[in-house]
Length: 447
Image 1 (cartoon, rainbow, N blue to C red):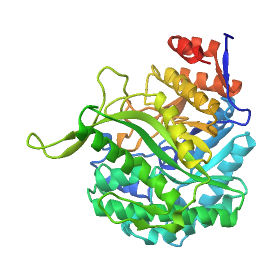
Image 2 (cartoon, helix red, strand yellow; image 1 turned 60 degrees about the horizontal axis):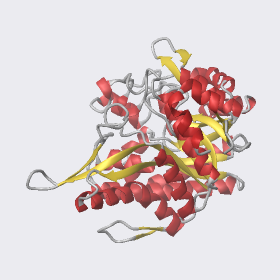
Image 3 (cartoon, rainbow, N blue to C red; image 1 turned 90 degrees about the vertical axis):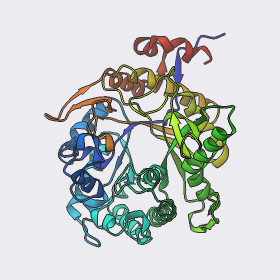
């Protein structure tokens, strides 16, 4: 057997990181997340995003760090509330600042992937009902046209919406995000409007920029039954898997949304409105169905106590799930793929090097089997405001650490590891032996 010392990725592979506007820009005071921060009750210790990473003023400093780390791609988002602070009122200075950012990336040899919606809505959209108001389809298309007309010469890879399934589940079903609803009908209306808004945005981009590549970022989890022998857990797992991650993509593929126990919703305008699928992959959960008389009917997600997990309810770390999910997506949908997010909360950088290596190994295996994955965007370049976790020190995702009081940065060992991977275009045995020696035999034994 020939000894393999490096796992090479394609020459054209996009090596990047990902960020989002509300989490890094700072001083965003005109969207629904800002309103939730002021209200309190949703975010760790009632913290507020405040200055965040001050990207509105100093993004280029971190662009220099990306370039020094040999990244050739970055996924960032445009903040709708900056572009259209009031309905039909456009802020040209905000568009000009985003233009500066995209020019700055291009000048450093970094290709931007631009996300149009990453969780936040302008206050005027929120006050009008957000995703439950079907007018948002028209509003989102109009916003898309404004942004693409202004920035399209600097970006040709567009992501319409980040994690629509997470928005619906956390806002309208689980009550974790403001306004904290638990309303199945509201969730259904929001899903329909979100899919139609995506389709309208997709067509608007292609109308203005016919050669653009347009997709969305979809959070996908490995779901397993807590008790494989229990039919209740098996059925609950299948239902969660379908509703959380299969429903959206199948609706776009078929042009019809099939919700168990409901009538089918014909949506021909959404059919085939993806040029690529972005996979946001982080963890595995186990599903248990609780039934009377010992409890009210409930679906619980759990983790196995003997397996590596993230903090709190983060879930099990399961690299093989990335391979399985990529292979399934290619088999079913037959369009190119990106890893639009993949990362781990790890303030002390104890597990992140091994996380990166083990997941890139599975990504390499998928590419070797013919799955057309075009790029990998690690989450995240820098520590940031992590939504309901706020600035909880347990939820630091950055290759680069941030002191939020001084805005000082420090690159973590995992950042040096990822820099070397980007430079070399793959994983070498020496690099794995240096940063995660316990993985060297696993990574290279079957190469």
